[in-house]
Image (cartoon, rainbow, N blue to C red; front, top):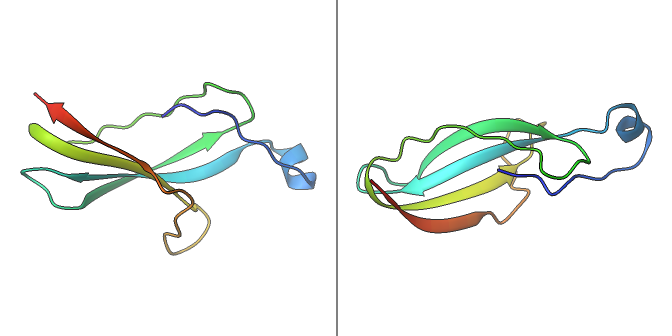
Length: 90
């Protein structure tokens, strides 16, 4: 995951210009149906910051989606529609 840069305003952003987001990898494959794995990332205003984590999907055709959720609530409230793609895993 590469950040395009986060922006903000107010005293909290001036004190700590970082945004924490919970990311979810959601996949469908021959071994899993609607499987999810979460990871928390922190991004600042700088473009190009990276975050990566391992997702074990199994081999074959996989439908993979990455989606952002709020990190400060007890429930998973979506913050993005997400990006999905079909990939062929060896």
